[in-house]
Amino acid sequence: MIDKKEIERIAKLARLKLKEEEIEGFSKDLSSIVDYIDILNEVDVKGVEPLSYVHDIKNVMREDIRASQPQEVIDKLIEVAPDKEDGFVKVKTILN
Image 1: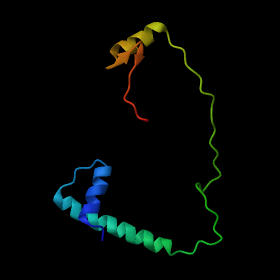
Image 2: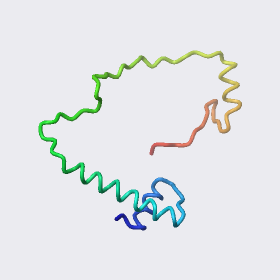
Image 3: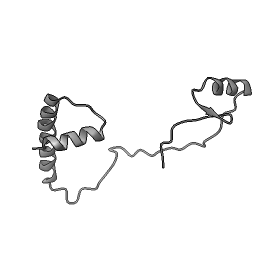
């Protein structure tokens, strides 16, 4: 069974605040999921081609085209932005 410490670590990674009684429930639930995956790992899949889609679907890409907007619309959008710098909207960094 997955212990309390591991559930707390997973909850922290998922940014979840769990109550003590929820930790017990999640411990049982996650343990049963892991046990089921162990059963699936025993299935013989030799000769089975791996696939990501059941159907033969292909991703169709389009040209990334900049849409033109009147300058007054752009100015209004930048004006109402919560954080801006040098005529651009500032956003939080998501990549290092």
